[in-house]
Image 1 (tube, rainbow, N blue to C red):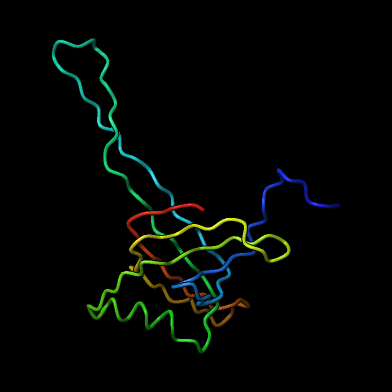
Image 2 (cartoon, rainbow, N blue to C red):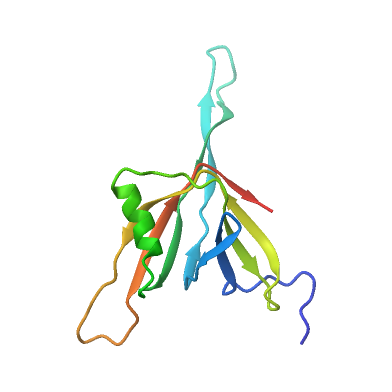
Amino acid sequence: MPRRENDPFASFNFLLEIDGIVKAGFSECSVSSSESNVIEYREGNEAITARKLPGLNKFGNVTLKRGISQDMDVFNWWKAVRDGDIVRDESMSVVLLNEKREEVVRWNLINAWPCKWMGPDLKANANEIAIESLEICHEGLERQ
């Protein structure tokens, strides 16, 4: 059955781009949330209902997960931050692809850098892939 124009896209086709280059494959990516804090304000001579004003904008972290391999790029990126060399990436994107592997949605992260790395849970009696996780914090999110 052909895809209809208003059908939602599947979530399993995505890329992580840094400076326009696809960096690494990940099995899971959670694009962050964003919210605007609400400031409630009322002066003494106003009605008993407070006004609601926009406050600071907050952006949640992006979490990437993948199976551990010989590729050290992700870990070395986190290690540089851990060692005090924080380089904020100005052009990082999570790209959603359609069934034909064509770009359909892009989320651009502003001033992104890795803030957390988690290694795998290792179990001798388990039959699963060893997964590493990388959390990326940022100062803004734009959707194209």
